[in-house]
Each structure stands twice: as structure tokens, then as C-alpha cells.
Length: 243
Image (cartoon, rainbow, N blue to C red; front, side):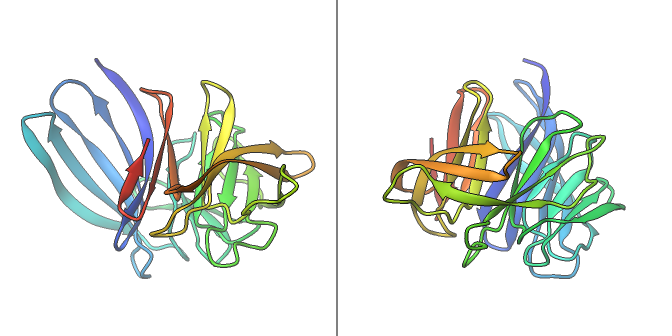
């Protein structure tokens, strides 16, 4: 199988905030470049080359280099224009850089910026941004900005987050993932090293609202990733991965 693709992973690894990788999938070998962030300040966006021969040799990393420093660095993903977008933590900013580390643009996130998710790979996709921290922005734990030409252009707009059930729900959203097979957004509220809620979220991008419907409680849904091979959602937190 020779399918080239991009995939973003949120990693619950000490000292590493998020990882993005690009490479070629085939029986053997697999090689490419990983991009990751660290949140301790200084040089906080890095790249490292990897090689992996499935079932033959373990993953090998080489040429680990720091490529730039941004004002805060947590979540990371590839934009449709091929650049990297970095979530700027409590600086309330989003940063776009090239894979070589050259600054392209910085915009206001509209709230604190820790995790992110894209609505599609279109040049005008919506980038949803998550506060993802204590307090979580109150009722505005999510914001969004529409990309232009596949990259950052305008400041983010805060979204009011609410619940469908009269009893309410936890609006401290920490992770988002879109499932194109059923056209549904999923969310998680698990903090770092903890369990939380998992459910669906409906966005109104005109009224700037996000409405949550809880499906499960007590699951490790901090990082969420859509698996295109199985059409399942992969959840992660507290050294636990759930499918």
C-alpha cells in the first residue's frame, strides 16, 4: 500500500506537548520527519527524522533539531498550505510557521490556545481552538478562525459552549476530532492524567456556539484523533489509549 498522508497526534508525554508527522505508508520501511512542541520556553518547536521497518526493527530517531521559538507552544498541526500552526498557550495566540521554522503569521486565538482541530483540508477551513486549562475560559472554552489561502489570516472568535441536556454537562472541552465518515464532531473533557466526558458537539459558525451532547463519562478523552483506517475515534490521557 503506497498512500502518502499527513496525520497529527496529541502526545501525553512528559515535556512534549504535541507531535505532527508526515511520511509514506508501505509495508517496509517507513521514514519521514516528525514535528513536536515543548512548553518549557526557549526553543519550543522541533523536528526529528524517523525510520521504522514494520515488524523488523524498532523506531529510530535522528537529526533532532530545534527549529524556532514562539510565544507559547502546545498543540501543533499542519495547515492546508503545508505550514505548521502552533497553539500559543495562555498568550492567546496562534502562530503559523514554515517547516523550517520561519515565521509566517500570528493572530489572536480568541481565548487561551492549547489544542486545535481543523474542519477540513480546504483552503478556507475553520480552525477550532481550545482553551484546555483550569477554568477553560468559562463558557467560551472554544474559539474559531477561518483560514485564508490555507493559512492564518484573521483573529479567532470566542464560541459560547453549552449543553443539550437540562441537567447540564462539563463544558471544559480539552480535545476535538472530526469524523468525516458520519459528518460528526466529537469532544472530550478529560484533563491531563485524568478521565472525563466524551460526546458529540454541534457547531453554529454563524451564532458562534458549540452545543455538547454527552455520550460517555469516565473515559480518558483528553487527546482525540480520528483513525481513517477504522473510522474510530482514538482517545488518550493518563498513559491510557482507548478506541
